[in-house]
Image 1: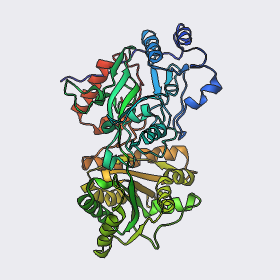
Image 2 (image 1 turned 90 degrees about the vertical axis):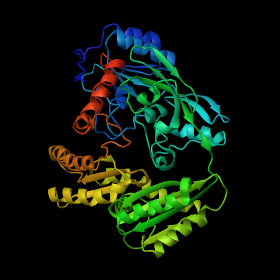
Image 3 (image 1 turned 30 degrees about the vertical axis):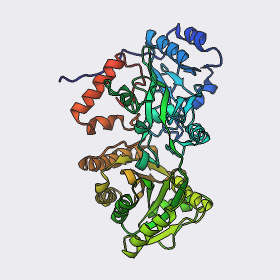
Image 4 (image 1 turned 90 degrees about the horizontal axis):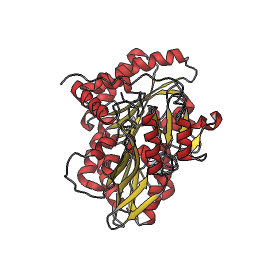
Length: 482
């Protein structure tokens, strides 16, 4: 197979002279953002790491308008950046600095079209907030399990574009497992209606899975059939401390063995991560006395009304007696459970207040995690003995947010140098363990150049061939992934 390179046509900062008129005719004043000040919220990511310019911001209200916008951009050879809630971590929804790109924001496509409790499905448009989907499921006595700290602002389209994971992926999987069908507007404006709420459909290639996780580089996801589940009627939550990360990995295995599908979350925080939250997030307090090398937030859930507390207490009691864990706090009330989760959810806020984080969203075989972490710690400290490592994540599915915190007054040139240096150390080691450098945040701009280094050559080429087939003019979110 010969190498395939995407060669988009040259762009200029000036948009096509006919584009403004055509988009205004499609969208009207309400759907077109032209004023520079009004465009400002769309031009940078929420972390403030990426900034760009756009010729126009288009906000279609439905799939037909989205298709018309894409046809106009296709015919004028105008590149398009698709944007949802703009809560991404990798710069995937931010335009470049050329001013030649149009931002297509899906926020006005915010209807829940259908809720089908008998089929356990819900059809939501791309701009619907994750929190709204979860509430609509609850109103129908059902449960949508994707749970993210940004659920009040992130959108279903963005969740699908990045294959979002979150705290419940251990039990329910990422968005790939939670979406049964999609509606997508292709780069040339054609509409693919794949909104089928089927559990079995073996009638050819699964185009849905190609679109999920493609970060807007293949088309615009406008709606999805989402999978609903029975509502959990009981939960049991505990905070656990352990001296070694390997002990938590063994505890995870024991909980899976004895609790099965009831194990809904197993979140890990290092002692350094917990200390950071306690220092920078008001109202938080340590769940356990003393210091523990690592902590885990464990939650069981079930559709049965009782029995979980006793089961969790039994498993953790055995682990404590065996010396596997060094401390256990079982939640006795909803308020205590909320306090536990506030500690876990407060890490991002604490990092922003404490310094400048070099983020690593990595995925490893669970069996390799306890070996990887001390090796990575040692390698980084050889480069910078006083480095602060903020290690936390979804241990239940092998996804670590292995971050390195730099002081807030670190000069930008020094930050850039450390970024390259630390990324190489961490990602080379991830590659040795056959892991992934992007688990749930996407590639975007952040990991674009590194992707080519770590993806097998044949796999990368196959991705490029799919991109070339669907978007031969490279109009969809250029500069992201590829």
